Amino acid sequence: MKTFTIGNYLVFNKRIGKGAFSRVYKGFHIKHPDNIVAIKQIEHDNITKLAKNIKREIEVMKKLNHMYILKLYDVVYDYDNNNIYLILEYCAKGDMTSFLNSRPLKEKYVKKYMYQLSEGLKYLYKHKIIHRDLKLSNILISDTNDIKISDFGFARYFDSDTMVETLCGTPLYMAPEIMKYKNYTIKADLWSIGIIMYQMLVGKPPYNAKTFYQLVKMIDKYKPQLPNGLFVSPECSDLLFSLLVKEPTNRITWENFFNHIWIKNYISESMMIENNLINIDF
Ligand code: ATP
Ligand code: MG
Image (cartoon, rainbow, N blue to C red; front, side, top):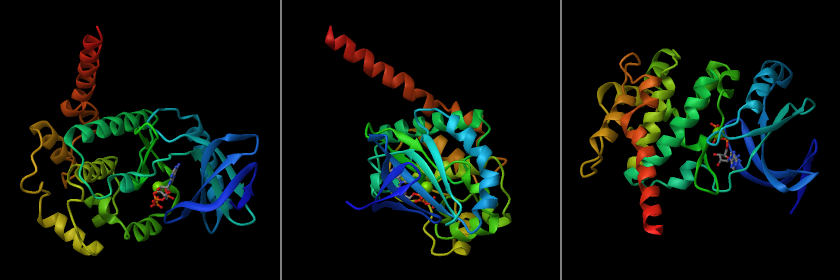
């Protein structure tokens, strides 16, 4: 397969993903050919300016270490061509959009992924990082079927107009307060988490609008609802509809999300299964 080089990395020509500002490739460090990494090329019209702001942040991100957070190994700056390359942990199973493939998951699996999402976000929250761009395509799946949260913190380096423009492609996850007033609060991510949870349970998002304006109107007019015939536990429904609250002040808080009974139950339930298996062994 054809390759090209970026710093000390050999990169395969074939692209594995594409985003609004980026292209993603597979590759490896020339000294560690066994360790496959993902290489994400970020284009920017002024990377010198961007790099100045981003460099300190990248140092913080490189130090982050959590099982549900995508690892950032290294960064390569290409000032001549206005590109930044992020060298990232490679996730063989791709992102959650293709993983779900528009099919709903059983409640017990949604609980597993929501538990992992909340643990990862709790870790970021402790490090004072809010994500700002939570969506299915930013949740990657490892070969052990665990999630890896990606693309946190970068959103703020793109000015709000660019953000809103590009998000128009998928404003689906955007909290109503941002859509309407471009007003970002710390609680906006919790709305996006609600959309993600809904998509996992139902296989599709709660609102299906063609335009940005239509979506704003729909959210204003209709409360999100689960489809007829889909039954979930009361605790599951409680969490979902506490996240999908239009008014940010009435939306569940981060603390209450991390400690929600439905999510907490995941740990005790998986412990119980483990204990049962031990009993069977004996
Ligand atoms: P946006 O530009 O709005 O962030 P996006 O999240 O889809 O959209 P990228 O983050 O650039 O764009 O990623 C594009 C795609 O590449 C992802 O959706 C995913 O399928 C794939 N991808 C990204 N990072 C990795 C990785 N570390 N391992 C495997 N696949 C990846
Ligand atoms: Mg992404």
